[in-house]
Length: 464
Length: 173
Image (tube, rainbow over all chains, first blue to last red):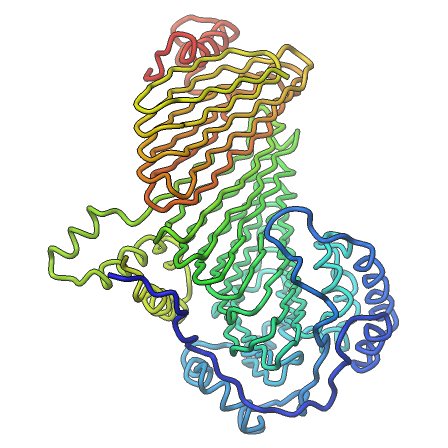
């Protein structure tokens, strides 16, 4: 059978026309940064923060490692777009074109069934938001970042940029200077938010960058699950997406952050995600990267309190022309901290997947434990898979395990399934879905159904 | 830094064993079909030294096979940086490559920095690596102590067993 190199048509590749009340000039200068802040009517401290970040961004070099970013020119993008409606309180008040877009993703149905709150990002601003009354009753704050800066300036100012400092890396500095949208969540002491909070992101204009800024603070003993899923329309020019997600897990709290990333294959997705975990807290990242042209994303856990726990589960899929450079970071700074990283990657039709990870256990982190498992599946001879882990252990009583395997779909498994009357294509997609099962089972139901379908779709025609 | 390159010809099998207390660079290149190598190494730096160990398993030809095990025992104030690469080239099908790095930190001031790297350009291969850092097991110590062996002696026995795995090639105990 022959292998096709044609990309399968992008399932969510549509876009609707819409008007902007404000669109920043193409490119990036100090004036544009100041202008974004002015357009949003931000307080002085935030404007200064943006300008300072811009200086850092200008001075910082591009990362000297990892995939090639030389085709990325920062002046080719728009850095801020403001749709006509800035905030709509109910579904019926949304403009028709925006509603149509959401209908295609399936937000209304999902809302009925699962959502406790929707904060959907359409372009650079959150335009639709419905938060269940119970959230407010419990004292939970769930807002888009822009509103949070206005409504809870003290809280935001105290934590903003503390987990990921401006100078952390070039893209974090870029985000800090031009950020727009994203979510702000504060969960008070002892409050458990039962239903996952969700946000939908969408890029809908050619050559436009998206720079969400998300900050989650889970106070002592609380629990929250935040999930984001992205789909984006196809455009011929490259788009840039560079988010910063900061999470603070206080004593005994637990936060789970789920991402299903399915940008169209012209998007650069360069994201910095980090969680600071205090005593007995738990942070769980569930990260699925299916789309984009190039993704560089390494969700991190900084375990700073005794018995803090971190977990990173990830799936990466790279098809035609895609590079998924994903991984995880676990830094153990306190005794009895534990971390677990499970990474599954699949590449086919010339796609490249890399696992890039780091585990560091510093001196004094007594009896810290870390376990890393990364498995890669290479579907055909055009693809490539790399593993670049680093483990730095400075503590005698610590234990660390790392294992990685790279293989193809086993002929025995295929033969077994085909002998049972399952056609080769179906068998292959069954095996792949089984391969990613340990991570998929951690996803909310609607995501896992969608993911299994997507993987099935992507595996079509891959039997070589 | 000492450096050694082995080129393994078609159908040949090579057993490589090294015991070092200094920086060391090892490259094993498979230059023919059905070539194979078993590599075992013991790394024991002297107290208060920093050393770098690099190994490369480069599979240029189909059906080549490699198996690598490196154990490090790191004493007081020493740091070992280990960088182990397995590279499987595009045309090298049916390769079976394995790499394992096990470390024991003997003192509170010992450090290990390990990066096992895989670069796989062919899909029809089997490639696995593993790296572990483990403290001396309390259960094992307790067992030995319950047999009347002093704690210090017990520690020595356990470390000795770990080292002997390489020296005497009895890896399956």
